[in-house]
Image 1 (cartoon, one colour):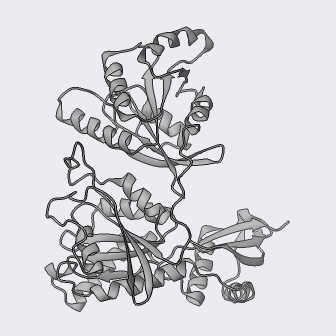
Image 2: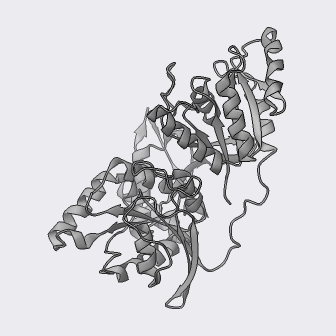
Image 3: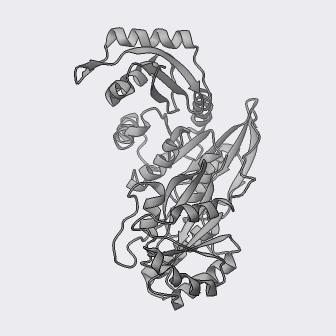
Length: 436
């Protein structure tokens, strides 16, 4: 099920990052009283009344031609394009400005539902300031205070009314759905073509060539697959996101529709911070993951070089210790045959279910090997363990006191379960619950 997408937009310095942090419940965006501090789209998951959605914080929209401001506006326009609902934030203490009117015009053209939020209305006596905002033609203005957290419930109540009702993904079937994510120009489109054995996707040396998401069904060795290629961005038919910008939101949508995510890394350039951020989205979504090192034909492919590169991956991607690493060249198709078996294995492990009696035998052996530690004079007792979900495999450990489950012991249990049952390619989750 794809999540709805909400974008917070507005001119600079109206409090967008403060509102974003309030809605997601933590300080993710940088908050500083200087216009232009938020220079890129920032994403997080949020929830309101059992509605789970992706929330985007944007840089301020400013209609000047200053290069940084132009980039911020382009990023905000991308967010508007991808959003299902837009929260338009204005500063209630400053009145309607020319920039507010320009932003309103931009929102008219989007044909997206807009919820108008008037920030910095900190008390009831300031309610009279709302009336002039009807002139923007965007419906009822909602008074809020980002500083004090007032009025946000009303804004969210209005926002969720506009969530699409047709967000379901493909019907459950036997196909393995997998997507390719990675920063621009790592060879995702070339890899799609290499997997399919035909030129289904335009390939270019220019970063961001892929303009639309492309889903392709195919059959390999009597198995059915759907491959989802993540897209770059375009504006009026022209790709404008530069090589440092990655269309994260489209990647999030592709990840949500996938059983397995291929995190593609450029062997020439090596690992950069952006690779880890991109991989983090897939990991946090609980998807099966295969790390693909592409363009291996361009480097010294001796075995010791491969091992050194994989050691570097394990060091940089410690949170993906379960993910297999595949080295290949989409251009020459060298080692391409090693990829699909790993995709199949990761998908099967992602959906694997373990028998309860066998699972408890493994946990009992783990306890005998390494008894639970004492914390403040108390000792955790593991009473029973069962698997409650797949995709990803999720285990509940019933204990006398969940607060006594230390993360190091949780990691120990995970390692023992992996040793016993495999689970290569998929994250697994362990939850401690008190047995009633």
